[in-house]
Amino acid sequence: MVIKVFLASSSGSTAIKKKQQDVVGFLEALKVEYSQMDIACNEDNRMWMRENVPEEKKPSNGIPLPPQIFNEDGYCGDYETFFDAKEDNQVYAFLGLPPPPGSKKARVEEAEAEDEAEDEEAKGEDDQPVSEEEEDEAAEAEEEE
Image (cartoon, rainbow, N blue to C red):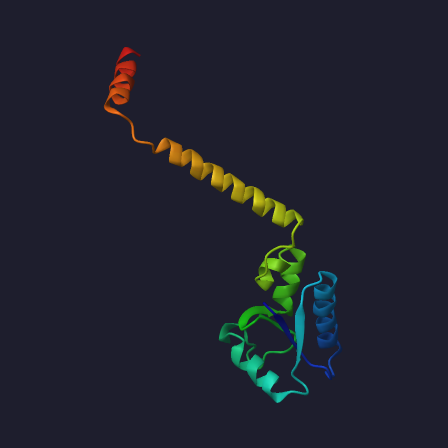
């Protein structure tokens, strides 16, 4: 899986430059592999980004601004949704990536998987067929109570 960050290498907007730097810097800090897709120098990148940002995520003028983030061809979000995911410690989920091994989130998911496996085992034991003798004994025990 390759994370693609669409950005403009020559943007006149200081705000856009800061947002791009924030996204790229954070991905580098997390050691997430990503590709920078320049929309200023590459018309194909610009057209691909514009065509693949979902309609509901496009601004009123219809032209999405960088940075836009994709996992392969799947849209992850723009800077605002990235920032929200970062604030909520949900960047890996936002990017559609599994949490890194040894992280708190990975340990929680491993524990949940173990609990589910134990629940399935217990459920399987409860579903064992009961003989007629055992049913009769259980019925008699209930009547005595």
